[in-house]
Length: 315
Image (cartoon, rainbow, N blue to C red; front, side, top):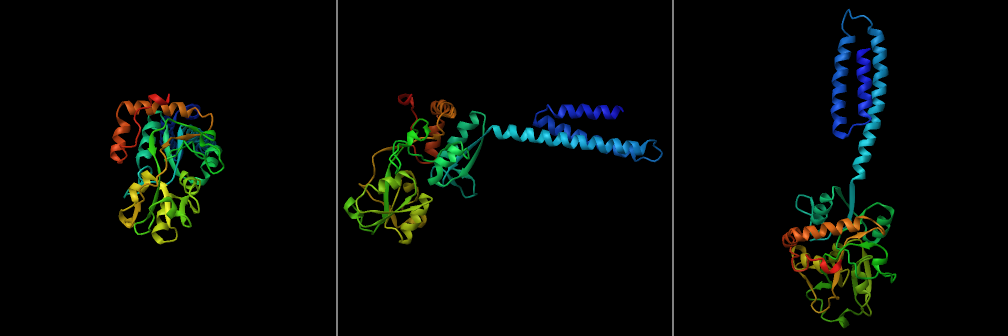
């Protein structure tokens, strides 16, 4: 009977403990179970059969309690998780040689959300479905070189679809083509095929040139591949990405065409309309700018000339 009362107390405790206490009590229960089984199976110990019946009932009760407690622990953990939507885009979000996701946006997102007490998860998205993913709750924010001062193909400003954080980086759309493509002016683009990321600011910019046919792809890096393969005449890309790839590695024969860049754009983090995360993230961006973290990350990823470290004029 004494053992029975002891186990019941453990049951009550498990229903109210946090995850660390829960694991400790689970271990204690398992140890106690071994001791009790050893006792009731000992030769000459009276009441063995009765003890076994009690033990079966206790085991059933404790398993149920453990299951419920595990669910509670899991729910609590998920509640503190932020899911960041991204696409592969160096130097903002990309895998390093070991396969670990790194980049200016990746590292800055980790710093911001960890300071706010969240666990950060990154999920690769289809850029053309970014609004759907955000609205459905599949992701909590879009942090991936998201141009904020532009409209989509439907003519609706992006700022009317999402809440944006402070602008944290400057960018432009640029034309990337083979060095011998003979493209030097807007007139040279007429009648040619442009590889663009579907739903991107680059797609909008490509369509602003007369006589250009656009060919949409899931990622900006796919556009580079198409130009390299000769299935597109040029690509319209974010300057940050173009500088990381054009003229390097597999793309040594590609270059950015001077004089055909767009007006200045700005990157910001996109949140669901009405999200309280916008204000929280802005406050953290101010702190990380003040303590030099943003400048340090910008230097690390070669974007020190375009990263914004003073948000005072955006308040």
